[in-house]
Image (cartoon, rainbow, N blue to C red; front, side, top):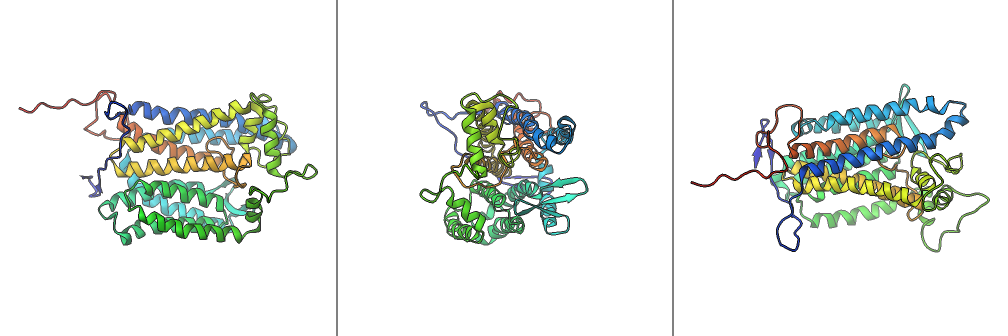
Length: 418
């Protein structure tokens, strides 16, 4: 067990390795893991930049604006976000541990502003805050802050991971407070993503697995009650259940009908960049929650597969970081962010394809949205910083003496006993 300068005890744990036919453990290259995170993230960011411009041009033209000048502001937000992420990936782990509690408290305070006069509603959910000319979604920041805070609390109390009272305060209380803050704005979709991200974080923390059975017994009826309390949620659930859907009404098509028509008209290779027809004020939220349908219409089935492949590689890289690390803080944080991005991707794709109910969550790094992109790419950069540290790459501050100056692709030599 290692102890840092502030007296925090950081436990060293070992995750199971993948074994092949020879029975020998497979050691992943840490440099490969780093680029497995960074390259898909950059590709998705650039592709999202193109798709965001393509999908929002119609709205700009309808408002009498030049689509090129209108996109200057979101373009600036994306570039600034990438610049911030570039800096975050250089931040050492000890800084993140010091910032964990202030980040979580600040995120909760930011989220509470949705109930203030600064709060704004969209789609029936009070999940936005207007600060002057800027509209922000504080729940996106809360996702990252909660995962980092859980990693800090569990790693700090690692010796008591089997004590239900200690873990109720270290894990249960922060999760309940965060979910309650999100649900005050009636944003059930985001609350589901927050809950799954927290679950992915604590699942690998070494807590007794029987606790999760009790958690499911409480979560399922709670979820049912939340659905039954809102007629819109009930209608969306019934729309995907066999025998309850009436099928598309061509005289009054719904959002999901336009989404399926967009995906169907794209075929294998799509209609071409910018050639979408559904984005012309037919498909609502075409540039945000339903950007995946526009991808399918303009780039076809191959385009949607390419996006899903990049997202899959990104999530896989994050879980590789967790598997390769022996630091509990890194394992929990990387698993939490990977679960959050993976679950959010699945929810979005199921909603757009009509397989699941329509839940308003964006497609990570691709959907148009400043808050979503900023905090998602920042979360990716946090996990990338763990990969950089293990690979022995340059970080801010004093490097780890154990890895400084060593080629991460070459295993350290063992001293012979004399």
